[in-house]
Image (cartoon, rainbow, N blue to C red):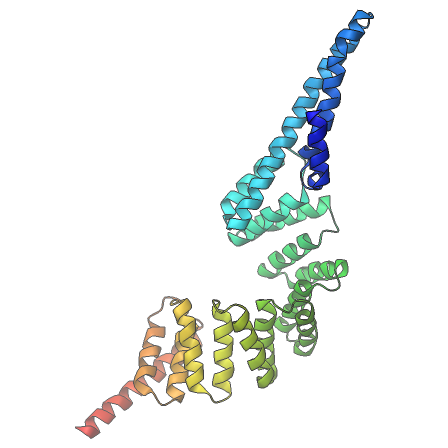
Length: 334
């Protein structure tokens, strides 16, 4: 009776769709009843039934145990994913797979964990294993596309995102990724179509507006760029990309004081962001704050990751020019 009640409760809350072990109490009950009925059948001279019942019970217990262990590690994996404990996600996922067949949900989380840890090859393997189990899984196609893009395989990435979009034509995530690929290949107008569509279906997502801000700035649509970058900052004020993009728009439209404030906010969030020092220096220089601009250029040149050599050369020349100007001013005052 207890087993039957457990099965009823489990089924009512939908657990069988997520955790197979939720339905095993029913099978355990059936097997148990078979064994309990064995003595009665034995009295009627049907001893083999008891033996078969015991064997089925042993087999059933083994199957139940396997399902329970799978569910245990699958649940642990989800908890680890919520904590963003990526090594634990992988460990729990591998343990779950050891107790069951390949499961696309487990493989999806494994792929994301590998990607977060920077192992793109293992991420791609996990996504591909998952797609062999379920070729119509939206998340697996998106994950594979992101990994392919990181590997520089843009054509394959485009194909993966396109398959994801066919599965869900209103996916802001897929539209955003396709728009980014178009922008990277120089197809700015088509990129705008995809990214603007992504904003319709993904209206509260930071990446869409950050990407639109960059794209509009490249297209010379500065009012749109300012609005998109501002929305990105409003959605996630703790991310540097939004403040950086907004600062570049402000700098390009002749608002160096506002730009300097945006770049300072970048550095408040991440003091190691080299480009923010460079653009802060440009902003301060345009605002007429020569001494602070020189300090910012010097801070940029002192960073271990300074960006392309061309920017280093510009920063060095600017720094020398500003320092010489300061010396000339001091000499004139003296």
